[in-house]
Image (cartoon, rainbow, N blue to C red; front, side, top):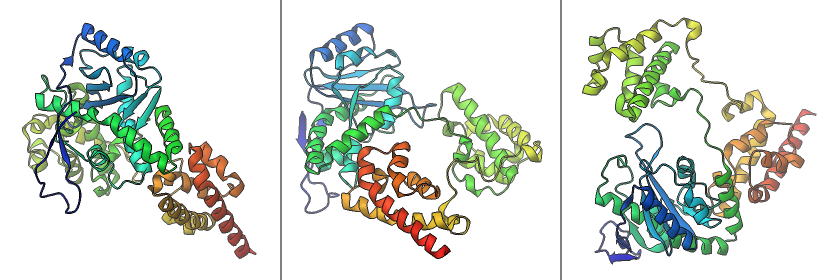
Length: 422
């Protein structure tokens, strides 16, 4: 690869080795593939090559509706890097057999796998450099930070939030996209060595397999409740207005293929729900509705507000949100379920301490929700902890590392509760 040594960086902490700027791809910037003949040649080149494949994709979050890919990047030693326009070439499934059982190397695979499946790409094995960095206890796990820490290279990330639906794509953006896969395989090799030295390589393989097998995320119940500052609303009527405005905005955004926040900002939804404007002039008097595109749809926004104002009391949304199948917030346990509270109070610090011993984030050792559910279910004694964890999707290494500690603490807490009851 081509890399030029950077000049002194005044923002770099004293005492740290100077990073090398990664500025130009080793083979230059490849053309973006847009035709079937170009795609066939790329697939043939990948089939003739061997080894892991670096993969990345660029979306237009914040600009377009949904999480669709607008550029796909693949790189394999012996085949080079290909940049593909998935709008012109929506079916990329031919790469699956060309790559075979070799690893696909991602950074944050959970973000890319499902959008890539829209193009028919189905990896059989993956390596996730972000997840590997987490298992190694690295403080910073973004791609730029991991590349700097492991390879000593400075990877520019200034186009990560760009509108990748733009055509034609600027050369500087294509350079960025090419560089994103330039070092992934080398990074994977170095991280593999570190995982092996730390005794965590098998853990990583189990994690990668779990990410690959994970189903697509389920649609959220009441997605409108994720509007920023929704908790500032104090009445059910205000929530109803927020819900109607959110749905109206979402319908417009989906029809126009535009990010919802560009149609109507969250802050406008919240302000209208607080003020309850009754006319278009009242609505447009709010500074949150000052933008021209927002004002052009003022009658739509007012109609949504009026629909909410006309709802009967029994049609208004609950202040509490949809019912959950999980336990209540732990702050209420001491009064509602003191035995469960004692189990959690004993087990949670022990799990945190074990994660610190293993030099990894506690959520990578065990999801906090899994531990809460286990402690809440008082029928789960220490002898059933491993079975419960497996049923909640914990990997064998997690059960091995956290299970015995949790079983011990749960049994101790239950015994103490029984003693107090006598």
